[in-house]
Image (cartoon, rainbow, N blue to C red; front, side, top):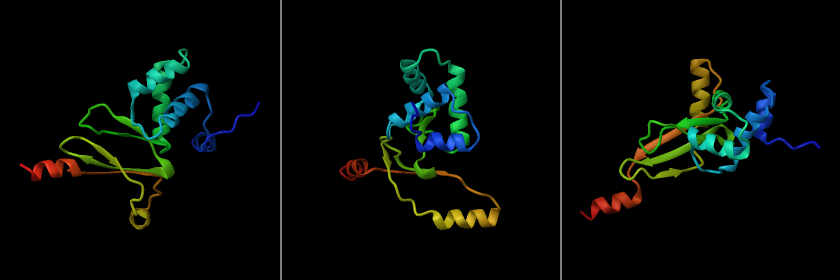
Length: 148
């Protein structure tokens, strides 16, 4: 039976990589996480729940490969030394991170097409994705700060 590939799995194949069971399982875990950001330990745990025969090294190699293809990005939110992996829909992902309570606010439109084109032209590169993070105070922390 032929199984329909997700767009990310198709990008993996189109880039010339084999669609191994381990890679597809890691990708499945990340895709099923929705907008949740997962640490490598959480990815390992969920992969193990699906197939305990997939080793740690295979999971980390898959995370590295998916990162190199700009399908995912490690991000360091909540003042953590451990990265949390996020899917990059359409090659980009955006956060506003509250520096007080560490709340993460995601937003879709970053309007960076002009900057991307300028950087590609000026620096002679082809950009494949980006992760944009702004830092500041969320509405709740601003209100709490003003009431003091």
